[in-house]
Amino acid sequence: MTGDRVVLCPLDELGDGEARRFDVEDGGLAHQVAVVRLGDDLYALGDICSHADYSLAEGEVDAEEGTIECWKHGSLFSLATGEAETLPATRPVPIYNVGVEDGQIWLEVGQDE
Image 1 (cartoon, one colour):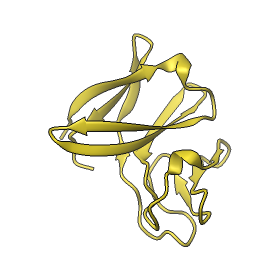
Image 2 (cartoon, one colour; image 1 turned 45 degrees about the vertical axis):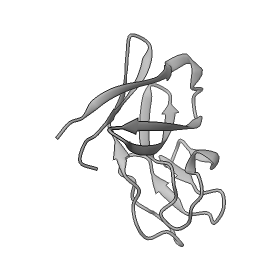
Image 3 (cartoon, one colour; image 1 turned 180 degrees about the vertical axis):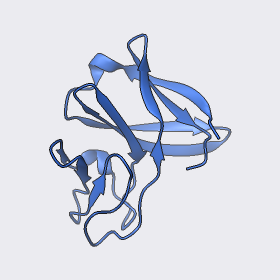
């Protein structure tokens, strides 16, 4: 199932290797999403660590490994799959379809995550 696209920001506002949190509403549901840019690639995953209630967008991005680290307890999450790669997190975070059109980053919401 696919959902509706929501425009987040111009691509040039998100630097290479940067993660930024976006709060997106869809039909009354709130999605807290971390969007990461690595060169020409974009990744979008649930912003809240599955181990504890901390923002992943505040953590460090490792472009070589394709991960983002929870700044509080050090769990690593795959940018591509949302899977927890290290403890203490054991559960994945959701991932979202994300892309660029006309220089604007869009996020697809309302999909099966």
